[in-house]
Image 1 (cartoon, rainbow, N blue to C red):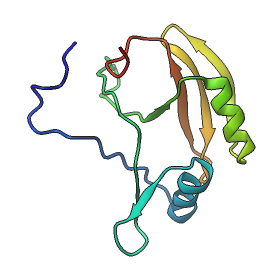
Image 2 (cartoon, helix red, strand yellow):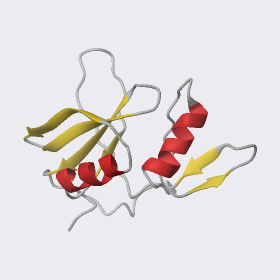
Image 3 (cartoon, rainbow, N blue to C red):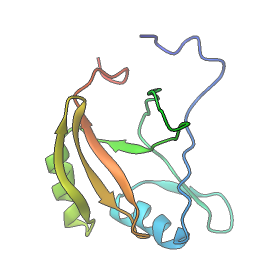
Image 4 (cartoon, rainbow, N blue to C red):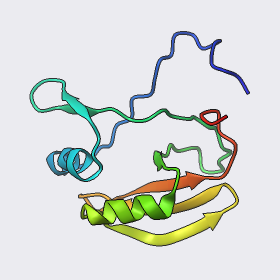
Length: 124
């Protein structure tokens, strides 16, 4: 484990969700997920995210990338999100690395939300 002090000037992660429903997605991130953001010009909102982790997993299919949101208490977070009108699917699933579900996004795609049980560089 490293504290990141050897990183060559990397200061964060910029993630992009591509969708044919960009306006609805931006409103969802702002209104339902409650993410703070800024207008970078012309209505292009960029949202602040909590600290991030990056992992590399083996793949037999040439590789891909995933984006997941993390929380400290999945059941409580899901209940709060559902109170804001957010739909989830797949139930609560327990794995060796954590408990997860899927948030349904406005374009019908899914975004994993999970409560990690694995060691994290973000937690002492």
